[in-house]
Image (cartoon, rainbow, N blue to C red; front, side, top):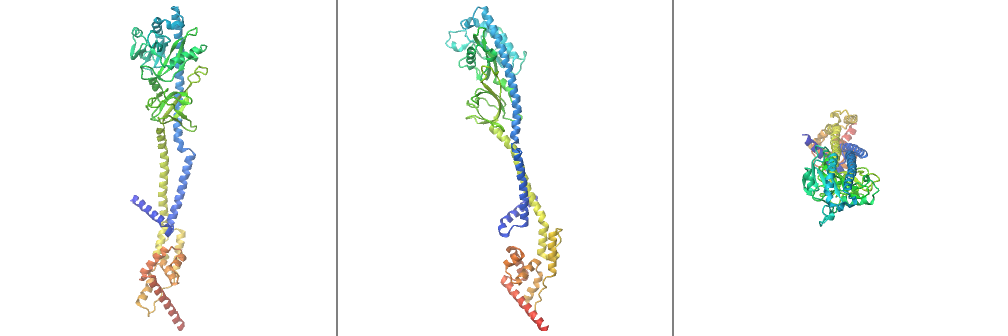
Length: 548
């Protein structure tokens, strides 16, 4: 089986590696090592090329490119839609200011005395209702409101924090249509809702609670401190809040209601709810499962998670994050990191959204639109992409090892076969390999066989064991005969190994075969027979001289 063959080859290389210090390194191991060095150089070159061309960072660059495209689209949409709400808010504020001032003038009440005429508040609110409903139906907003700086009952204990007003909600905030608008009454006198046939929300309140309402107090104070500025430079987008009696975060675009004499009568504006923001700015999660969008105010260079709106399938809301702002760690070459104490690390990109003109009273307030995902999700995605490259390089290296083993085996097989034949039968019987160097060696050995020393003829006076010994010399192979002849010349085993350029272990192997074929049991017995051969040769030479 192929698997067992590869396993056996692996064991062979491991055994050869362990015995390299004792037996030396075989040609097969040398060739295998050379091929492995060549393959390792190729793999290293590919790795350097991938690193140099940024292949391992290609996944991060691709993610950044995708996020930049998505962010550019969302930021442009936010700039246009929030800008449109701001413009419509300015028109609404001017219309309501004129309506209120005209009604007060008809009652001969100066705007500054509005809080002193609580009996006029219901009539004022009812007159502004058509303007509010009309503006909400034409604007991509989830609500519209009007809050007067007065209360219907100044004698109540909480009258200082209660303000008369109207607050209408559009329950279909994603559809801007006169016929599809689904308006609900959330704040205002009940009589106005009944007379106009409006549905009332369960969280209905008679008046607006402005305790701690920054969106209300700041807008009034700014308008009163800068009466020279037009309303188009006094609108403000407030950080997201949860209004009393409600459970949903909303952003309010608040504008002052200013009379012609500079009196600030209250505020009005539009609402963008968490649901509307989610419907409008949820990112495409087909590529990034945990990607979400956040529109947040910037405070001292940090993103305010508490005052933000969120959109996306990944359920992240201020309750899931901490109230601490997100620290931005900019990465000029890749994706930014957003760190929040107690809520982990996020990764993504951000872009500033201009909500105010440059000469606005709130031009110093910055807003940022951010696309981000949990850092673990991005790391897992990039790891999966780089794992493919790493596995590809490992597969290339493994294939190189297998290929080196197969090539070294196939390349050296003819030489190994030729050496085996030389050991067994000498150059005369070995088959040609069609490898010039090996065939030249075989030809040399063939010529050596032809000029070899003739067999010794045992004299008749020697014993039968000696004659058998001499006769068995003919059974030695060429390699064994070469070793035996060097023993005849008086060389030791180590000297023979050095002369024949063989290892001492190979000489020992030849010795065992020589002992077996010549029927001797030790080197000492072999030397005895060699001495007998020398004496027989000397005696034969003496007789030849005597008869000559």
